[in-house]
Length: 107
Image (tube, rainbow, N blue to C red; front, side):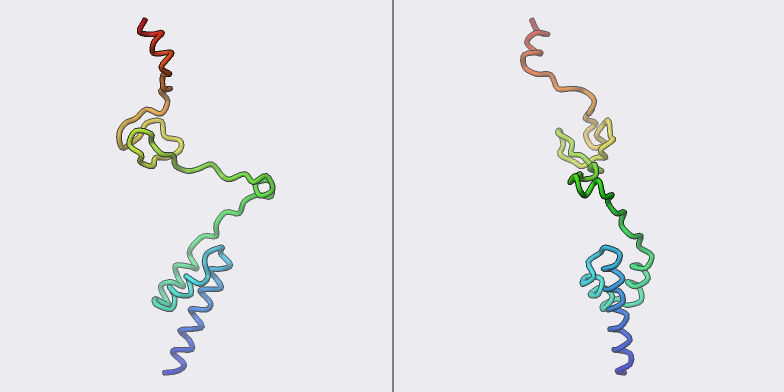
C-alpha cells in the first residue's frame, strides 16, 4: 500500500513542477493532482504554455490591449472590437452629443 502513496505523491509533485514551468501556480496544480492524479496530470500536459511578452513590452511597461470592454448602457462585458453591444444593442460608433451641441441643434 505504501508504494501506491509514494507514486501518488510523485505524480502530484511532477504536476506541481510542470505547472510551474508552464507559468501556472505550481502549488494549485499539486493540490489538484493530489485529489485527481491521472486526470489533472493529463490536463496540465495538454494545456498550452502562455504567450510570453516581448522585451519591448516589458521594458516600456506596455500591457496588451484588453480583449473586452464594458458597455456604458448595461455594464456587460463585450469584445473590444464590438461595434454594437450584444446585450442591449448599444451602438459604440455613435458619438455622444455634448449639451452645447444639443442646444445648437435645437435652436
